[in-house]
Image (cartoon, rainbow, N blue to C red):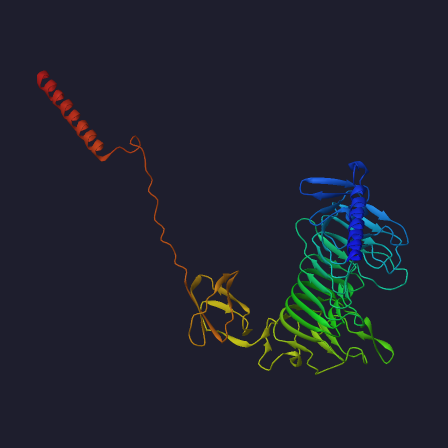
Length: 504
């Protein structure tokens, strides 16, 4: 019992001493001499170095970078590590740069049970090491702002991502406010059970993957993409060779190939996937067949590739496409079971495609592809014969699809009435659209009836001009004037007669 008390007392003393040292590192430091500060409510404490600020900060506080921070050592002495802390890290418009780290080292590490949120403009760049940011242990990191850049070539010739999520760690990317998020060089999920939630922001990876796993050492990963932008100019935007789950409900994913999957369960329930590659087949990952690397065709939105001998055939990938938009170059395939035709590892039950989807990939026999490219249960759109105008629409549509009807009246006519009914004669609601109407396709055929009527010519009424009394006296005034003139004439005549009579 005495030994236990002595151990506890010793450990407590060491903890207090450690805290005292860390606190002292930020005591009495003037703002002009500080590289970072600790913000707690309305108070701000200045620290000589970023490491001092990180080591001193406690739960709920914010470490704010006050100056650009750069280290050139070929070791990890001056890289930043956050261990078992729940804090916010504010770049505050500044950048952390590692110039000489060996390939296996990241510039910034969050580990243990830490919960860290990155905010503000600025970021982290690793010019020769593995990643700008490594999240490991059971740490949870949220990126709300900042740039995370893997630049230059690693010293061991291997390809690394800008951000790595390893083991049981969790990363959420959710751009907020004016502080944009840019991850230049991609995100790698690796180890057992990493979680990635990509909600908003941009991943830009020129000749590598925007998001990828490692089929040799990644298991039970969870990747959820609900928004944002993923780009890979020369490779697949998403490479999924590992066991685990990938769910896509939003966002725009663009690459030479959209997705290449070799293992795992993948569901696409929204978003846009663009494949823009038009060149020769390319190598994606390390899969081999007959001793050579497997090459897969460019310009395909989703590829399931189980062609490698051995490694990925034990748990081949399965893809379910339920919603979303898919765009590929003309002459290319939207989805492809590569070198495994008829395997039914890709099942399409919805979504809109700019090219025809092969029937073998449709999830059931009652599905088809409408004239607009949408996959679903198809129904007819019948236009009732009409006169004095033109009514145009696709002849079929999938359930739930928005249908646009273009209506044009002949010269001298206008729309009189519009009705849409289903197979049971029930009215289908519609809304106005540019040049016509739009409605949602119900679970049956529909009939569209439009009538036109002549444009009525309005009756023109002549305008009445009013004048003043001086210009046009009233009728009563005219009569009075005429009577006065008449009486005056009679009087003059009488006088003349009297004069004549008197003279004679």
